Length: 209
Image (cartoon, rainbow, N blue to C red):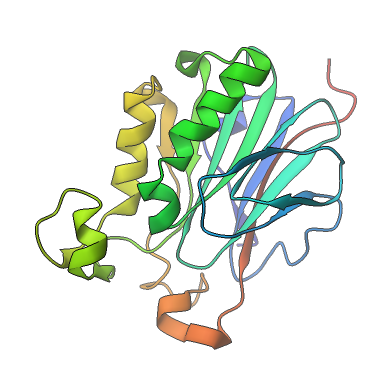
């Protein structure tokens, strides 16, 4: 399968999206992108194609704009506000998650475009799940854990979205663990420097009313 879809986001006829796999997409041509730095910095796409700058979440509003992120164990999170037709692509590794990048993205959507988090649909894509994600004490403590152990970043990002006002029924978990499924996904922790990156994207279709 070339890319994965969210059942929630698929309900919006004005939107196109996908979570990347080994099979593709293979290029961000035609998409706005980021120089990802494992931060909680949110930017707005000021062009339909090319790098918008250094950060880890990218917003877009307006037909013809598609925003994208690259991952290989970190979690891609796609957000859509149907009321204002605002979309966002988020790159959430442990640093971004500790910095609350998903709620920070919602905050920027509200401040810039009037988004109400209760209206937002969210999809959390493929990433390294708790079954394979062991972290040291220093990282674990940033998530309220007293000692080294397994960390569930997907669940933590979902909790942060819920606390920011997104209903659990409006949060979709897409796919399984990138580390476990070598035939379908790239994984930096499994393959290290030989790992490629998967491209996930969300955009507003041109010509939609």
